[in-house]
Amino acid sequence: MTTSASAGKAKPEALGRVTFLDGQGELPMLEISTAWSTAAMYLHGAHVTQFKKKDEPPLLFVSQCSRFAEGQSIRGGIPVVFPWFGSREGLGQHGFARVKAWDLKEFTPAPDGSVSVRLRLPDCPEAAGFPAFTADYIVTVNQSLTLQLVVTNQSRDAEFTFENCLHTYFDVGDVTAISISGLKGLSYLDKVAGFMEKTETNEALRIASEVDRVYLNATGRVEVLDPRLSRKILVEKQGSASTVVWNPWITKARQMPDFGDEEYERMICVESGNVASNSISLPPGGSSTLAVKLSSETLK
Ligand code: TA6
Image (cartoon, rainbow, N blue to C red; front, side, top):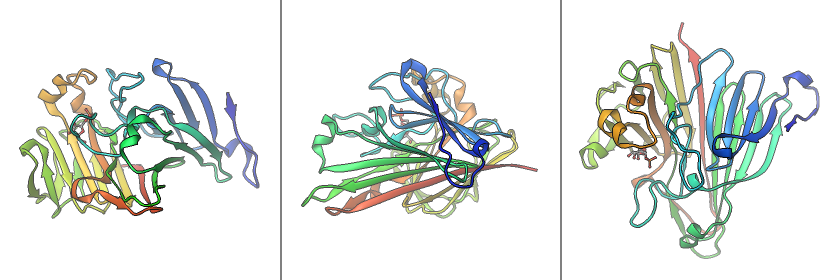
């Protein structure tokens, strides 16, 4: 089914479209198209799996070995990590939001040609361990991809402390040729070295081995320069104090059943959130918005 709204002055063919269809694993999926770009997202995990501008290769990496099944996280795209990041005693890694089917609340093809979709995390048994909250996710597609995770503490008397992260997998031409800038001088927790705290000394980070770092108090924009695809990716954000950079490299890639042995060469995760000492505590009635804008430009 396809739908588009004829509001105001915009020419009909410039309006965006939303198409509902069965995606992989017969999971419900939305295909979004605008005059500039196409995108795809699953209600499962509110998971964006594709964003592609008309004149560029896809921005996001999705593993050929990814599962598309209830209770499983999709390997690639943009997993929504919430309400905790990493492992937690007796609970799944990276929270439960990414393995739940979210409710579609509204979709809006706007007069300017962009399309916004809003989803809400439904109540679920896993949430019982937390104060009452709502989690809304707004995805806006136009020349760029904008993501907003809005969490509100709905309890009357309990503080709600949580972590969140938009765990973006970018598609790159050759991970050993890219450089990542915008992190110099920041402290980071190096998971590869047992979470030892270190300081980033490189103007531009290069990947030549397993990298798994949580940059703290990292509020600035990050750029990924990809000479092989002649592309510069920009990650701009608000309401986010942590940036995570991850590439599993050879050994970890082989250990992951839903990831191809060579696929580490074609992806890099640059994630935006609030984790570890940057976790968020909301008072009753309090609300927080994690907003991330992903855009790219072709290198001349
Ligand atoms: O964000 C980096 C990280 O925390 C890595 O440590 C690695 O585990 C990755 O996430 C993927 O986690 P997942 O649970 O999706 O396998």
